[in-house]
Image 1 (spheres, rainbow, N blue to C red):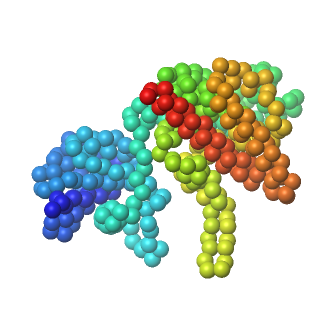
Image 2 (spheres, rainbow, N blue to C red; image 1 turned 90 degrees about the horizontal axis):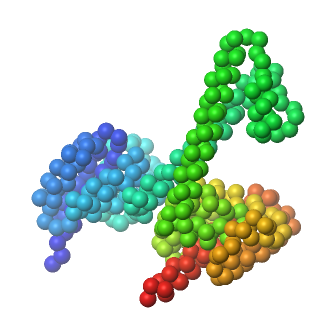
Length: 373
């Protein structure tokens, strides 16, 4: 006879967690609160293991605790699943939400097998992902301070009309500005100092991300992805650190669905209502692939920069990239000729680009295994 499993669900928060535990032998649900401290969580797990007659399975929704809580519980000899919050079933008529109810509801769905687990990265993969996300945050901060500075100058009648913003000529114009009021001068200097700080921080993070891309575990794959038009080092390393394990997708459509690039649908009986893309999954990779897809609006020619990125790469990788270049450029023109909006056409191209990336990395893994054997 199989030993029953003890299921434990946690509604996690920054300071403390609400815990609901089901004892399969008695059917009793125990509820309690534990502080979000390593010592208290260790004591809780050891206490539950003493009470249980078999395995103990924990679960909690991905969120504020990241994967550190999962690793701590796994090290104590229990299994812990991190659940995708967007895929947790919700009752439309349930209008009362408390930590206690959330923990009990999560426990019931966990026992019934209705939850979807998030694929967990290891510590090195998560650290690399945090670095690329930090670079993205630095870029957003730079854009924000640029907008604030321009709006400040516009409000006070200083408008640049000699070309594009943030060129060397524009920066010289900024440094030459004179203000009649001392307060305005001080505000400008504060904005400009913050702008310089954001620029230097972004440059520093760019160097760190480039060093990350040169590590042995990433360098070869980054070079392969750079064979595609529209993908350079920053895009390639961000895609790798965000997804970090392409082998979990058994087909290209699974990757497309994970990135939220597939059309949504609301159909019933004879009525069929297709909608826009689902926009589920990883929004950062979806945005990067959409930006890369815009490059395929041009004719399928290999530029000098793309030739330099392809130097030294295997023929099979260049062939896949060439097939992607020809097909995606043709796809863009055909959809545009059918009257589709350019933004929708680009999303369709990004969806197929994700499939080519999957094919590239799948071929790389197959060839790597053959070399080992």
